[in-house]
Length: 319
Image (cartoon, rainbow, N blue to C red; front, side, top):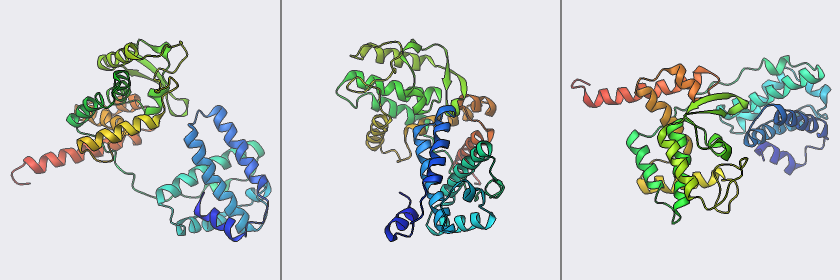
């Protein structure tokens, strides 16, 4: 629960009924879930951000946050919300995320109920430096995969984990995308249709090493498959949870002395960075990663430039 919301609950100052605003928010989230193709984690983050905002408006105005009250939010109210949120210790990045969620909520309110959205939608997002992706070096990525292959006493679990990580590093899949694959899609073809964030569809080449890794996993897996089953199974035969792969990555990186940034997502970062270092086209990499905006992919050019500067400083006699 947000710190501000906790304080309100503790001191009992939130005596105003907020069911109107909360009900509106839940209707909006239900709509997003139905048509937006958003992950449950994203929906939960939106819920927390907008709930905190609704409680702030209730406390700030002293009124029940109905459609009318939400519609009457003006520029001063938004400035007060931003000022309060900053004082509560929220980082600029988190504030920008919360504002994005609130704007999405208001766009839906405007479209559905015709309420005024000008003050909210015109609020500027705080500027912040986006952290650069932290890829692994090529040799570290290969060593990590080799080490993962000996983590479990069960050969099929090792084969499963290697197959998942190989899809992240060799094909640039998100972990959620890899774990969403169905058995009916095997044997994996040379190119595979992936449904990514926001239900966006893209075509991804599947390397022979990834095809072989998945084939090996299926051969060793002790459980039977139905066509519509998820491809990757947990120890008890159910769908594999992301936490298992994250835990295996954590154990392995500690054994190899790799940084804490060596996460499953870092393998996807490594895929993009190594492609760029090898001369890959930025637009092609954008398509392979499923980035909606080229600006997201351009972060990897900064990583590549940093790598080049590192090499330059180490090798140039006058550096």
